[in-house]
Image: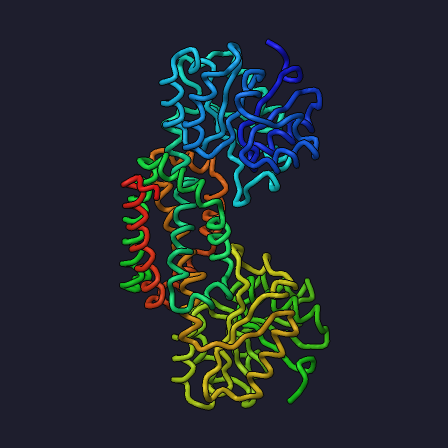
Length: 270
Length: 270
């Protein structure tokens, strides 16, 4: 296996996560060839100017020369991109992703056959923020952050080792977890909180006093509205991709709120 | 009217808010005499050592010599304290409070008679945090923060001016608002978010994966758990004191969550 520094790394999607991977790799070791594709050509040219990538272009041109392909797109776009990659990938290349929901992505990878599935390492850096896009990316985004890998029984050891190596190079702590557990834990710690934040902003704009509500927003609300300023399209993807686990924890939450409501109603101060 | 710097100011309750008022006043103008009472004697002696107050002691001893009395207690404790103050107050003293719910406090003040009510200026500095106690207090806590005053028709102009002067000395922006509007806006921007945060932590500790949930807590959840680390007793007071407005906005929120739940359930991605 070539060491990480001799590899060609292709990043599909040069947003907050993809852009930060590129910057971080370049900061850690300038010898790697870092390639990128993005629908937004200006992100590519900006990244070339920044020295974060060596070249940008089309997937069809760049994918066949990559040793490692990192799919850094929103969850639903990841599963729709895997078949394209699988068809044009170098025979010994390794593929990973950054999706915050893993089940549907792994299902897609498995449907592409064992030759692809063995070389696919499902990953999730827990390093998102309410900011998005290449302009928000930073070389140190992953430092001291957790990256969860959810390898399958047939994932090849050297593929897992290479992706582990990649994230450690970026300063992250790498953890293994089953994909079911990953999706349940993330539903509770990330997907539900974001859904609640979107819901509260939605309620408050409809209140009679909404202008004053936003003007005098106190500490409590500021945290919610910051969360709710996250990329709505991406989060809509996430809620849908992780619908079962999200619905389960949301149900438990609504039941709990009904209890709280009764306590407030009864002014039960016990 | 004596200028602020010649007055004796009594702070009842030397917690985050009361302690920060004391420190801020001393930083702004060391000539004032700042007195304090607190159930916790160690907070008083710490504040004397810090130079934040000139003397600490019992309400019965200190209240009769104060020109301005600031009741810096949790909301329900404020209304139970006003009658005691009213009975021993200097005839021309001014009283204010920092309660985050105003209706029951103003009702209590009015019940004490017009002589007291005229000199009572209901106030609310929007500067709380999840920290509490004298040890968390800071001289600059109110700088650039909003303080809402909810004066009544019979509030004396000089009383309002003195309290306005007090908060401006501490660097705050002072705003006027009706008490009904205050309680509604705060229910939406502060009381509801805190209630939601307490509810989510309550739900998550009961989940099967709760250990991992708290270990891998992502960005979204961290904001909620920080809010939920706020003083539970004080917030319980607040929810009860502002039960009507809180229940109204909580109802709207639960209805909205049910809509979101259906969207997630139907994987409706429109």
